[in-house]
Image 1: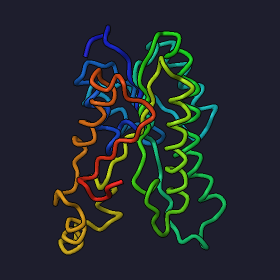
Image 2: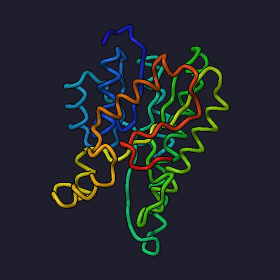
Image 3: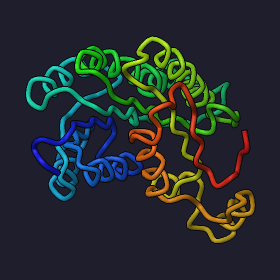
Image 4: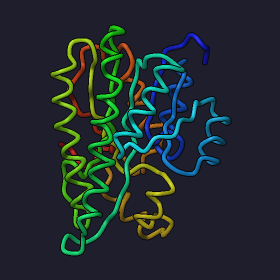
Length: 246
């Protein structure tokens, strides 16, 4: 990483998949701003270890996004890459889901990418181009029980991707990267993958017979932000080992 390298911004970029994406962008030579919402000490530690620039922002809050964007533009310049990765889960049966449960997930997972892209895209357009990658989810295409808020937000993100690809063309490309089952602490806990029988059941549904790594997702990001995808915009790239063949 050099001071003269292109700038990248990754929301939720200090843990899980987001950290892997941030690390990959650093390896590609990007000065990388990793946005985080809570746990400043952990975020700062991750930033120091991996060569990131940690900036606090709650993407669910338009004011927080605006302040973070202003700071990024003033202190670090215009991004060439924006990765909308931040997201949350609040899983409950539909009839038990509260209005707050619904709104919090949509505010973060759908409105967050809208606000952050709107805040940074004008500078990207003025600078002559760039790439926006929204991190989707398979539940945005294939529904599941107890996750209607999450699934609805991720389905909306797919359409947001297409609309932004139309409106920001030809200068800024916008695509959606959709991870399948990916080995993170959060996934292991949610799907009880520390149980060998449960893990075996999950693996039986994946043709490649393995759960994806965060590096698999970073490989796909490298393609989407690089020159080999220069004619690709408004598309979804599903990285799931063939589990769901859409």
